[in-house]
Length: 174
Image 1: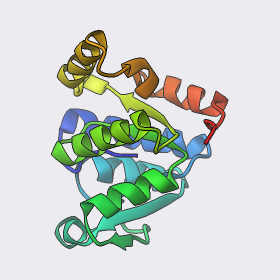
Image 2 (image 1 turned 180 degrees about the vertical axis):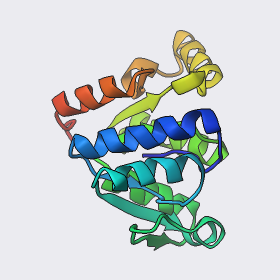
Image 3 (image 1 turned 90 degrees about the vertical axis):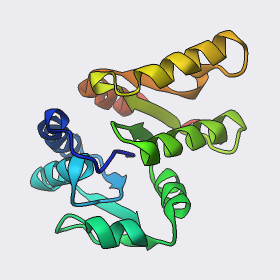
C-alpha cells in the first residue's frame, strides 16, 4: 500500500477502519509503517484488528516519522529502494491519498507496468477524488493514444469493493 503520511483528519478515521477491514479479510499490508498521518491511521487499524504489517521505510523518513509500535521496519537506503521493495513484496498494489511521494510511486509503477517490467494489479482508492485531476490527465493521454489507463489501473471509491475484487483476482501472468 502506498499512502501519505500527511494528516487530513477527514480521511484518518476512515483509513483506521479500512486497516481493520483489511486485517479481518486476512490480508497483510506492506507499507512504510510510518507513525504519522494517513499511514499511521491505516497501520494502527491493521494492528488493532490483529492484522500483519510489513514495514519498509527509507532511513530519512524513519528518522523523522518513526514507525507504529508493533511494526519491525526494514530500512531502505532511499525512497526509490523503498518503493521498489514495497512493489516487490506486495501481491496487489493499492494507492491511497498522499502527496508527491505517493504520486511519484504511482506514476513510476504505471511506467513499469506499461513497459512490461511489472505485472501486478494496481488499485487507486480515490476517496474524496484525491487523484481526480491526475486521472483526468491519464484519460486524456489515453484519448490521444499515449497509454491505456484501463490496462494500467483500477480506480474505486469504495474500499470494500477493492477487498472483494482482490479476493477474486488471480495473479497476472509473468
